[in-house]
Image: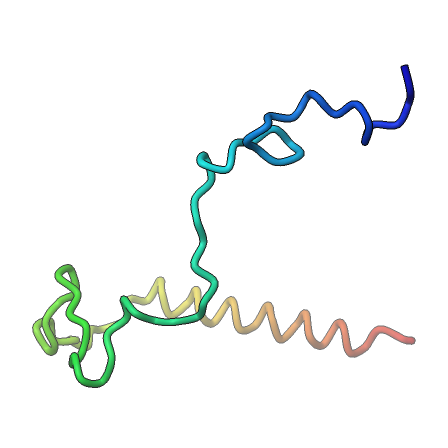
Length: 91
């Protein structure tokens, strides 16, 4: 009995690789870089069945609430204070 694993390697499957995984269990990867399934300029734009139609939902402006405006102002003030604090730290 020797300690060299290359001489007595009977644990791996004869159809598989060194980890014992059979080659037919793997999913083949296409690494050729060709875009056969992607539409070209001749095909026209690719249509998505779930995308909304162009200009089907208009964007309407609304009035901001006081709570939302105060939240934005409070966030701006807190970030300004953090930046001032970081600048005034002596190095």
